[in-house]
Image 1 (cartoon, rainbow, N blue to C red):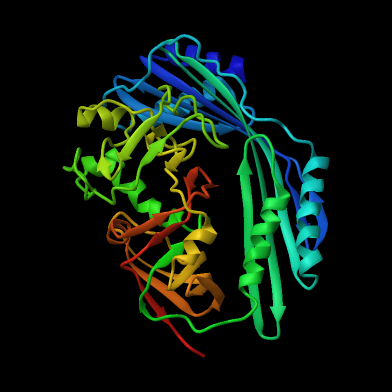
Image 2 (cartoon, one colour; image 1 turned 135 degrees about the vertical axis):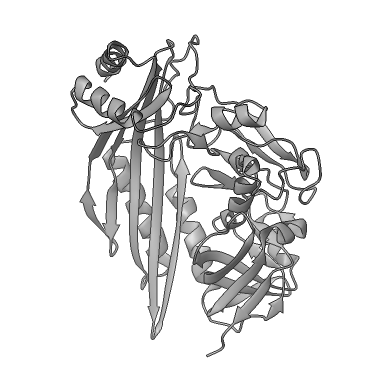
Length: 431
């Protein structure tokens, strides 16, 4: 892996490329699967890819390979693509010291993953023996290296643990599906996963008529990232550059509720990110402070065009793509109330825990089907609601924020607590 990168840079230089970079990614995953309450299978999967990006006469070309590859062949492919492109500004990070970062996370044995999976299923079925459980528990090790012709060489290894349980509960013609899980760095807690599912099963003992019109909506930590996707898009420097973000000219102004603070922390959570895919060191950034817009996130190109510089957020959607602005470890600062405390303050509301349908775009408008939701009456969860939709606008709803919970959870690389908002409409069909 190491030798190939240097060979590619050398061959590219001899072929007339004035600049080049090599991006390498490896992953090794060992998932264990459970089906119908039993261990189904063990797997071990590995992948390796390499991307060469070069410039000849200022014209860019990119070529990708998976598995063994001849350096000359990959360079020739990249050069043939560069001949079809127009010249551009060459974006490369220069050499820096101490760019080999310590490994993050702890590798867990397959035996431990199996033990965690069995424990979670046992805890659920001790209370609900008719429930059918499925699951996936995994330990994934990812390695990233970036080398370029200016002398940059940075590398890191990241280990992430994940555990998910899905339950099916059939009651006559009614099928209830509940799923939950964890993504962590150094260990998983199957009891916590099981307890969350047991709580949802308790709430779903009976089906009730949903409310209609505008009522407060509580998005659990599992469902709340639906809302933050719109904010992530609005903070994207590329959207600002294109004039698509509604916040393009609002730096330093109040753009949302004063209780909302959003930041990026490269060392927090299950996904470390010491540098982005352009080699820029990642850093802690506050994008929204108490509702006031502080900064947009950018890659090198976007930051140069905006005049703000890069924030270290240039990431590749895949090996064959150019870096583009992307968030990682998107953190919503939690509030003070537990889920139970937030529930008791509601007179009539809906809890949204799982959704069907697409997410929200940069406009903020959305309409989603509630796959798993509950009704709250006078501070108590009274049952499950079915055939219900929630619609409205994210910006409007978050300006009418009621509370942020203290139960932050990682949904991928988004850390969010539960959220209660007003200003959304509910639509339901009563059978």
